[in-house]
Image 1 (cartoon, rainbow, N blue to C red):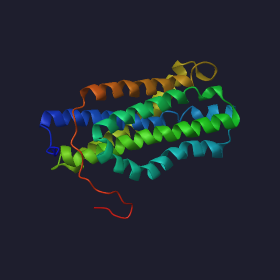
Image 2: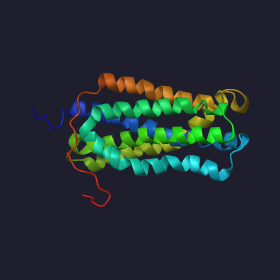
Image 3: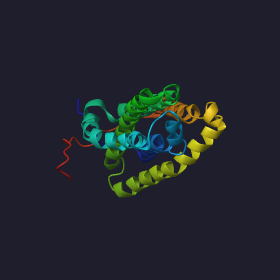
Length: 218
């Protein structure tokens, strides 16, 4: 049977867009929530500044290289499953990042790099799927919808460091659960929204089937 690729009714489209916006909000928080407290915590575990830079940078590097693969997954896996998977992957990675404080030196670095890569994979899946659905959800106002998603992501970049610092202090700072609480709080929230998305998201129309290419933009 051929799937109906026509847009859903407007109220349903708006609900889908709201859930996509949540994915686009919590994904970037993975990048920014640690920016205030992580460098000091890493320094206390014998990690130099250059390595800390790589722990931050590997996140965006993963986004760059994983994007073409994420594009190719939309048709094969389905947009609904990918949006749910994005929150699950990011949530699990962030929860585990909260316990990297148990390690020292190279073990701390390797654990952080690995989990940051996994979190970035979750973010990439969410971003690519969300943006890919806009032409189907709002065929006449894609730029407006994309601008709203960019606004949501901008808010995440602003709120992330503040939320991270606040949760770090709430957890007791350096000597208690200050390192763990921001990551676990973010991860559990992402997992909660994965459950919400799985329960609420309808079957989503897939974007047009196009083979992704870094050389072709159209």
